[in-house]
Image (cartoon, rainbow, N blue to C red; front, side):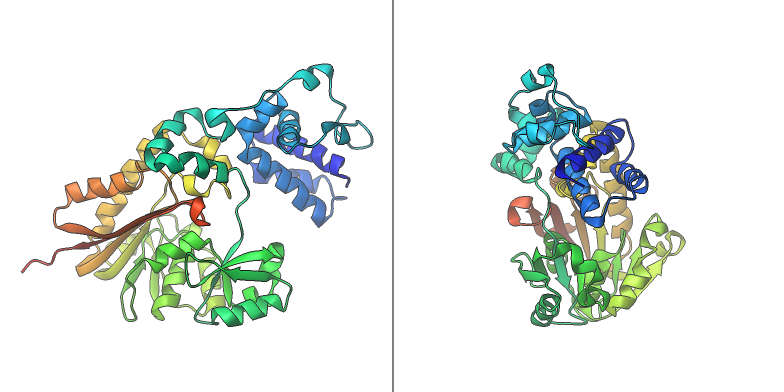
Length: 390
């Protein structure tokens, strides 16, 4: 496919997304109806689509319309490219620009230029202060690929060498001793020997830093209360060298975890919702709670446009309930860890303050907010302990 044909395909996919179809479904439907498209074409169309979603407001402003055509046109203008090279009408290219389209569009400003929902911008400014604008600017770009070196299988030096042997070039990432940043060959990782043999896992560097902040030690009884796909459970098992229990309110999210644990050589025990309430006492419980996902909008940009103020209020209630239930599972001197992939204080520090108000005797031992300016996704982590009564 020519660049122009790829742009036309992206316009088609984006129109379906704007009509309400999830982007992944729209891309899958397009690929199934376009058997002529090779893997390179599919990757290129995917990149165009997700960059347009990340930059929905600014590209619509530059392009003069919030349509698939307007977003692709706006993206070209944003990058300083000549639309006439793509909008030719030749072959499978998009139709030539109309006079109205040539005269349309404006340079975005404020929250529009940062591709931030207008209602959310004041909350981000309150949460991030002077970092709000640069953080949201960073969210307009595709995220880097990060790997976690699995210490149960390899050292960082061994993992780097194994990856380099397959032309996947990486470098250590400063956020965690286990973190690698992929410089070349990111799309080959999942088929590499280093990945298939469990030397490395795909995991954001800030997510790894959250686990690194936990006071884990061998022999601890550890529960990942909101395990999801299990990335942090695997990272904790690698640190402790022992078993880690994983639970999720929707066990289907953990369906791939046994296979991942087998590949990693990690001991993971799955707990159903029916069994977790009577499973304690635990030495450490990690609650990586459901949240807005605002720290990972580079990777999942659709969430930025689906989030509402009502959903944030609902999430706060859910987060409070999880903290209350998880804290009851800990034994004397146990550690409660709270994590989100959010940039918003209403999901982070505010939830910890509310928990402390409801539960006297708990103390915050460590707390940190990571943002994309640190080189990873936006994550928050707080580590709490309870005073032991005489």
